[in-house]
Length: 458
Ligand SMILES: *Cc1c(COP(=O)(O)O)cnc(C)c1O
Image 1 (cartoon, helix red, strand yellow):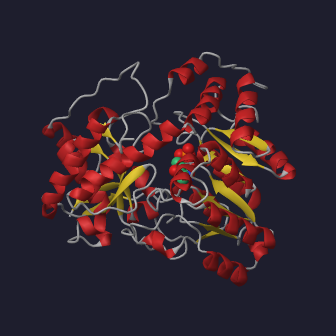
Image 2 (image 1 turned 45 degrees about the horizontal axis):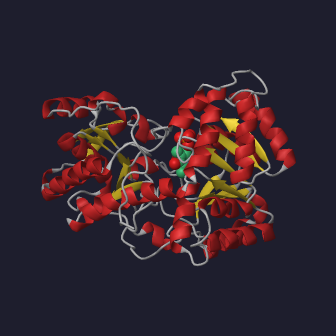
């Protein structure tokens, strides 16, 4: 088989896109305060801000929208989604939510008491926000390799360090740890996967101490693909089988349907515990909607149910991961520094190595994301010190070791030709990297500052 197989879909409907001229780009980045989140979509040529809610749906999903049962309670589409989630994820109970953070809010509120600790394999922005909002301290227990950008050859950089987890249990006591948040894959580490062996070992350790294992399942299909590709004993298993086994070791999950469920909206919480499920249903009506829709239209639940089935098709997921690898290999050939191995949903440029003349407090990744847009119209995102926010105790910046710009590839949206344009733009900029200046805050929001903060050039 060819290394990079063509797109495993034919195009049935198109959205025209337009090149953005340099004057318009310059105005757009100034108006946005050097924050790519604040650029209008129409001012972007290729939009790699995120893979969240940006997937192209299939003809079957669009057809599914037409059979939306928009009943206030007991929608047919809810029962379909519930059946699919049980079949593919294996959890007992399903609570739909408007998106992933809706599920995070419910899980965190119901299980965390002030003074608790929630370990996780690296933080995620909204996930940690909800943990802290409910009085927990987040503790990073990911393996050390994950904090080192260049670690090609380490197949499962998302793995939990069992020593770090054991140390936390010894220090604070298991009764202060309601659950571990196990992300598969780990977004902020660069889309890095967790091995089945590690999932199993984490689960055994947690069971012994009565700690629940709650997955952040947002990119679980990508994780399953990496297990099939890299872990001995799984070569001949289907993605569906691997996914099911991954979840068989845990107690539930939060899910952003906007990622691996191939939809533009949606999310859910899964739970095995009957009592917790009852409480979650009582809470979802306060914040999201009836437990049979959770803030979603019937048609959205239908599209999500169909999307889950499509997401485990081998050709789809193999192409997705390989399209990212293709972009990575093109950049690598030109010496552009990146997080390695390449992840499942994005290429992460190593902004420290790209811009060695900038201090971390000059926001190198934010500056690099702005520069990429300025020179090419390609929109990317900062994942470094700005995203990490401030320490709630000291008020100082969190200073993550990884200072990255994320080039996130939407699912089934762009072709290899688009990847070539992106690669050429980044390579050209890399040659002129000395001209990129640092940034300072003009406006810093108190929480989740990366979404709406504004900057100016130093
Ligand atoms: C996107 C994302 C979330 C939050 O989901 P939303 O649907 O955006 O609320 C949580 N965890 C990870 C790893 C994500 O990528």
